[in-house]
Structures are given as C-alpha cells and as structure tokens.
Image (tube, rainbow, N blue to C red; front, side):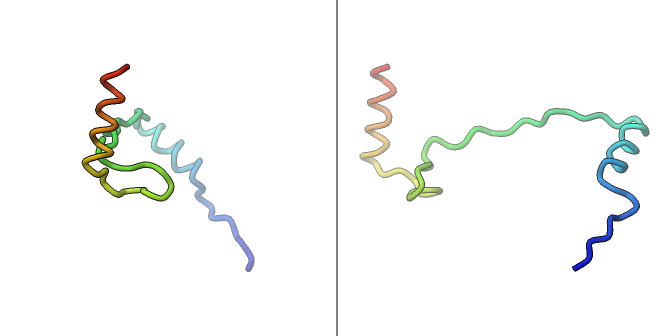
Length: 62
C-alpha cells in the first residue's frame, strides 16, 4: 500500500495549538491499587489473604 502523508501533520497541529495560546501541562495519574498483582502470570488479579498478609509483614519489617 502506498502511504501518502497528510497535508496537516501532528507537528503542524501541535504548533497551531500552541500559537493559539494553548499550553502543555504534565498530567497527574493515580497510583495503582495495592491489591493488584503485578507479576506476569497475575496481572490484574487481586492478592489472596495470605499474599496480603505476607506483603504487610514485609513492609512492617522495613
């Protein structure tokens, strides 16, 4: 397939936004909930009671 560039590219749109008085701000994000598992085989699954207790005990020892 032939890719034909559009006359208005993203850079042109960004520059037009900035020229009209727009500003670029750094957004804020929420931290992930503590109860979510983040390993490869547990992505998105909640921790079990035992895992929560182990994590809490490990954080209290520090």
